Image (tube, rainbow, N blue to C red):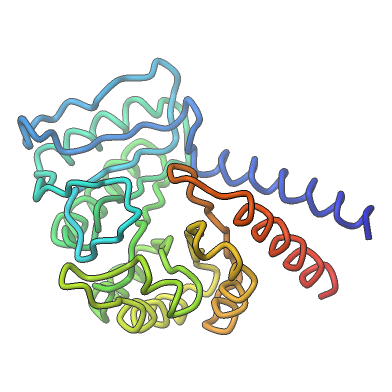
Length: 265
């Protein structure tokens, strides 16, 4: 079993490297553009990287339909990216990507589907501009799935787009931290959207954020997400809040149980 676990760790490490290479996240080939609170129509990215890039992240809004208590955007503002900013970013990206033939644009927030009208402008424009240069562009978004509906799925399907969905395991774990502004839990609404997403794209990732208070329920959370229909379930442990030794111990125990379970499968 020890050898098997080492093999799994090596495989996970390789997959992580491959995933980062594909998405460009945390690599020099990644560029992030967000609306400026001082000048929302500003077309200038935060910074330019000299090397050709493959991945552009458009932070189209700071706003969100939820008010998750652990969100890194503590003070959400209604800033939304303008078409002029998005277009300028895409134009810049097409040139900055150099001779890269396969490139990606990902929409982030806040909740990017609050800017669905902008996404519907950006995606076909990016596809046309990429085609002019002999490139292929893949687009996607990270979403909480609350606003997913038939129109969203239809557009995603037409353009071969992908989703990265945020859902925190069991209904109880999810609703503990992922709530609407009025305090209601969001799990029922999220699962409804998620099931539409998975019917369209079964390989969609469930981004499961693990708060230290839920560390002892990691296995239960993963099993619930498998039941919902997910195959790709990264656990994202929160590192900007304190963990007790007991919570760390519970997390390690849960990871060991998960490892044993999936190796046995």
